[in-house]
Image (cartoon, rainbow, N blue to C red):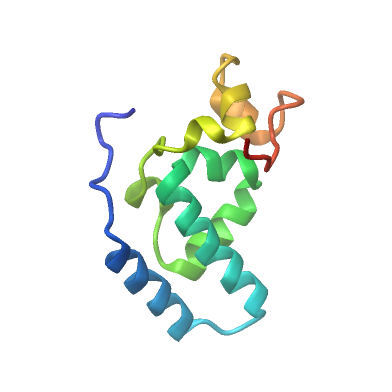
Length: 113
């Protein structure tokens, strides 16, 4: 993990973030639901898994909806990261960011084992 890993947010703090996002949101409710889901996935799996599951534009859209930067508020690697097939595969390559960008085939998958 990185040396600047943020302290783990409580369920209450996550609820506050989700509540603020819901209160301020205008648009397609599916996007709001997806953003809140990504927030909770990041809590348990880490922001690296969220970046491997979604493209960067989608992550940025979710962060805008939530009003938070996942890299600043969530662990880099969560306690369930090893269940993500994308995270497992990304550990075997030389560049995480190339995997995120899709430059290394066969990494990006939403599958959890």
